[in-house]
Amino acid sequence: MAPRKTPGKRAGERGKLRIGDDWNAITIIALSQSNPLKAIAELVENSIDARANRVTITRGREHGRHFLSIRDDGEGVPRDPDGRPDFRYVATHICDSIKQRLREEGAAGLQGEFGIGLLSFWTVGEELAMTSTGDDQRAYQMMMRKGDPGYAVVPKRALFAERGTEVKIAPLLDGIRTLSGEKIQWYLAAELRDRIRQSGVRISVVDKLARKQYAVEPRQYEGRLLHQLPPVRAPRGDVYVELYLNEPAEENRVALFRNGTRVLEDIALLDDFAHAPWATRYLQGHVDAPFINLTPGTRSGLIHDDAYSALREAIAPLEAKLIEVIEEQRRAEEEQASRELLRTIQRAFREALLALPAEEYDWFDIQARAQRAGSGAPGANGAAAAGESTNGAMPGAPEPELGEERQRHFFEFAGPLFSVTISPASSIVRVGESRELRALPRDRSRRRVEQDLEFLWRIAEGAGAIENPRDQAVRFVAAAEPGLTRVCVTVRQGDVVCEAEALITVTHELLPQLGTAAVETQGLPGYTFERAAGESWRSKFDAARNLIVINNGHRDFVYSGRSKGLKLRYLVRLYAKELVLRNFVGLPSDQLLERMVELSLRTEEHL
Image 1 (spheres, helix red, strand yellow):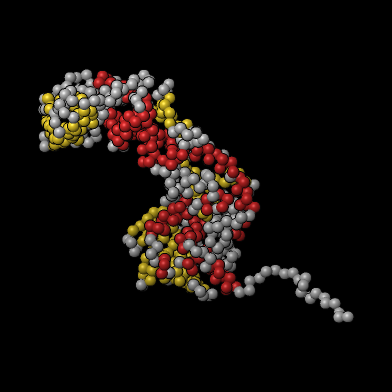
Image 2 (cartoon, rainbow, N blue to C red):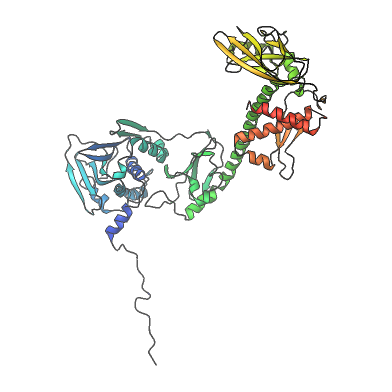
């Protein structure tokens, strides 16, 4: 029988992890920072941690090499027992930050913790020269080179020893040479926003290549600052929130900060925050969680540990409140858009009704209001008539008070002649009968022009006659035979000449007598929405409130929401449908459709 094998001596061995190749580990750490702007920001943060009042970043070229330097007036590198900058400790204690030790001793406001920030110069340039002053007022310089495990510390000749520290990187990597001073300014303004505000440090970027200088000011958010938000408190500390409600736009982001330094440009990049309100693009600002843990290499990633879980749980009440605020904003935007659409639609209908026969389109007393407003008699140079009032008000609009009218005239004088239209621009006349036509001259802002006008009417095509062809309002007399007549008017004001035309159909028989409107005259109706997704109706008229109720749950309404123009045309057609049904009571369906086509055509022209 073979002897039974026993486990080896090493089967139950325990021990500690060790670095097998120190230089390989340092190389991996140095190249782990993928963003050169982040590397520059870390060097600037070193200056802020050294309590600098001023930091100057210089981009330039000397001796044929591009360089980048960061100079500050802070406390400099900590001294060794001899009073010199302790460069040896900096170079030989990678991953053992001095700031960690100082923070444990009670120092506040320090950001670094990993002891690897200086190595990030590998992603910017080839060599690093770090200069600082000792207690003997002499300057010392440490030299490090990318890919070289050695370092050197030498005295630096200088006429005057300057307080603080200078880090100079040269030559820059090929891809970094195009990194402009403006881009560095923009990045630092966002990345170090709160650190700049809290410390009061003044940072400037001198771009010698572009011959420009930039001041780094903390980024200003746009929108309305949100107050009275629920506090975000976690077991490890409070979370500072500064959020602004803005118009929805793709550039709106909520950043994630830690101790005043940006970690992520957009918190919605995290899977646990890729939802409303963070992903709605209504918010700008940042969330500062000082207790979260970062990935050491890039400083732009989070460790999903218990600290991260605490942030996620603590922020839930804030998310609910923000969703409520955004919904209120959306409702307000929809109401504002509805008001703007209503004004556009009503203006287009009023313009259309000026071009249509008043006796055929007695739209809720709109034409009658225009008649009442225009009390003067027709004349050669601007007395009132049907279709336009003497005070310039559009048909259907409320008549202004006397004081309001005087004020309006004082501030809104009509400009020079710009255009002219004929009212009505399309009409039907029985053979041998007549119709009144009127020219409506306007300036560029569509105000009525009255002064120094000359009118000349003529038959451009077809048969018929015009009485008093040099008046603003004329009478067209139809011929004895049916046909289509094109009437033109030419209006002159000094050297400005404008023309317009109207089409008149001369026929033996007119359409049957129109019915009476089913509601009392109330002016053009407004509209409101009612969601009835399971019903087939698109719109209906509420006579009691003089409103057109639109089913915003109908598939056609949903489809029209793809663009503002499509939605506007859809609402206009619903308006035309409801107004035709209410104004032409008793007409057969084919004639109602004819009227709807006519009205829609004239209205959509003015959208």
